[in-house]
Image (cartoon, rainbow, N blue to C red; front, side, top):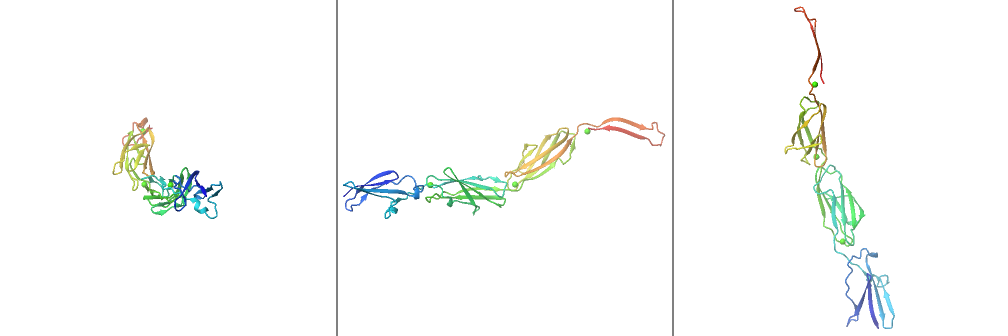
Length: 293
Ligand SMILES: [Ca+2]
Ligand SMILES: [Ca+2]
Ligand SMILES: [Ca+2]
């Protein structure tokens, strides 16, 4: 007569009781809280021991030739991975047709199945490579040949227990064309005796407007139509005016003008008329020496 029947699963021991009628030994057991995926063989081994009243016992486990496969408990978790597209960021303007895409995927318990990861740009899959990190993977992929304008990255993944993550998606804009920039004043080589110089012009960008503008590294307001005007103070002599237009993708157009401030009036050094007196109707020479800074 069998006296006791015990089962050992995941470090816990359970007593089975004999069912009336059938004579079977039965117990209800709560499955382990964690997936069996990370166990050796992806299952929890079950060890059964039957003991008779005389003190003899028989133990079988997952290695048993007949019952071994019935003693392998698979427990599936049901928490989907979490996907975060870390680059590009949402609504970013990128100055490249080949942006690098990085996607972080984490999963509790069974873990991200890297074979299920699919990263797409505008619906076309990208070649992606994953690197294991804390709790998951960091995937990197390179898009290429993207036309200027909006694009969408999507990322999908599942864990080892078949739980599919909610798809992540990010829309961004590529822009490889720098802003247009026209400096209408001053012209190159402009000379003046006024230390206040107006710098004006127009700038626009098709894809990543509005444009931010600086004149000699000082920000200048650009109105809705793209025109700008500001005043700079010149120093005596040569001055370099640098006008820099930058779009939201970081593309720049730079125009420089060299202008000259001259506030010193000419100075006379000598004057002579030869001959003087001169005969009426004859010629004489007027000679002047003068300098100017
Ligand atoms: Ca999971
Ligand atoms: Ca642009
Ligand atoms: Ca002068």
